Length: 185
View 1 (cartoon, rainbow, N blue to C red):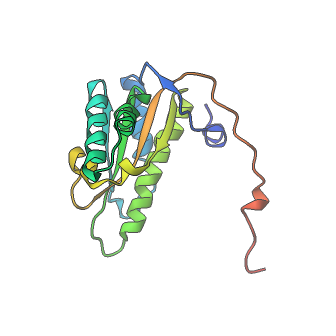
View 2: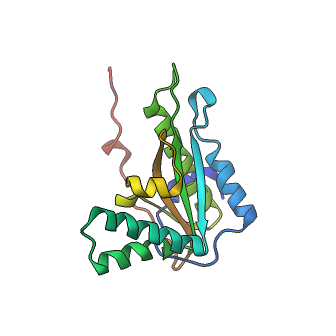
View 3: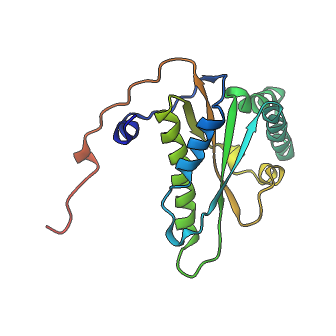
């Protein structure tokens, strides 16, 4: 697939099933992530892969986080436990923020987000379905601790990855002029 085609036609694919990407496909996903813009070559990111029974363990971690808040109904706990089961592979994107005299943490966060985007584009280019999710469990301190995040790390998102259950939708064509304007003329 041509790079421009992948960029122009990538869409989120939320309905996923087995199989997960194979080793060669995963290597392509992560190599694409490592090409993200990176001022100072800090490489302010890391990735956790969760699959198999690890998804059930993550669901339990989500349920524990809800219980720690004290207001979780049985239905909410069941929903939390099921969330990681929506795809055969989850990639947790973590921003590893460093004190740097020239590269602010906000820029490092954006670089980690670009790495996540690289994974999504590479997935689309290989015919793999993927969707970027956040929600409460991306920002929960109990979840961060359970995943082993350090004090200088932030969870950027969960990338759900697998085989699309249906043909991905066609993205809408947006009018460039709605988002681009000349300045200084």
